[in-house]
Amino acid sequence: SDLLARAIPYHQRAAAKALRRGANEEAVGHLRRALDSLEAIASEDERTKVEIELRVGIGAAYIATGGFGAPEVLEAYTRAEALCDHLGERVDLFPAIWGQWMFRTGRSETDASQRLCGRLLGLAEKFHDTGLKVQAHHAMWSTSFVCGELAKAHAHAQSGLALFDARIHQSLASSYGNHDAACCARNFSAMSLALAGHGDRARAMIDDSLAAAGTLDDPFTMALTHYFASAAAQILGDVALATANSELSVQMATEHDLVQPKAWSIGVSG
Image 1 (cartoon, rainbow, N blue to C red):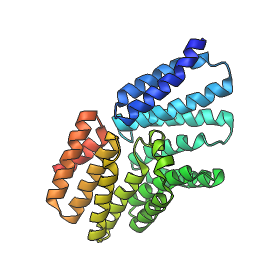
Image 2: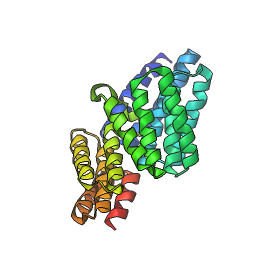
Image 3: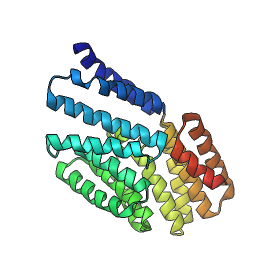
Image 4: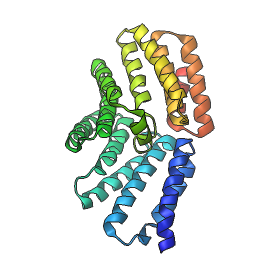
């Protein structure tokens, strides 16, 4: 029993390392083994807390392997939220709600996405946590963009970037969509600016996002950033830039089995 309990932190660390290098199936395997060992934790509250962390990690891994709208994503985050109910409204609840927002957004369920965004903003304010505020803006810039509110999407992206501290917040990617929030903010800003007719600013934002993603050892963020660069370039009518980035995204997504950026980028490259 003690041996199983001690193995859980090992699997959590191994899963985090696997997620960072894009080995998502390996991460899921470690997290599943950790879940199988939960009964070895004697304290019910501690067992619940650890399971929440594991469910959030599995949800993030499934986002990379199955896409934002994969059923396993909703299953993981719904279970995490139900577990949070046993402990009361705590910070643990935020990533569980965020993951459900990601699922709803991935399925273009905009009414549900907007309701969840409001809840995330409220929780971030309640807990006075800068990292949670970054991720609440993360939800808002994506949802606003999908709803066609380009100025609002750009504003939330800039608010998130203003709060983002790489030393503190970069490590949160494994709990929030398995991709870097600062790169995502730049990606949505580039798209919003391109659609609003601000070509030069959009190009500058594309360059900034590609440069930022290039400093990370994060295949999922890099594949997504190449996709968004290709999509923004497509809006701007730059065929060469769109083609180059869509091909790079497909290459990276194929190498790491990343369903979402691969599907999106194939659409750009035709």
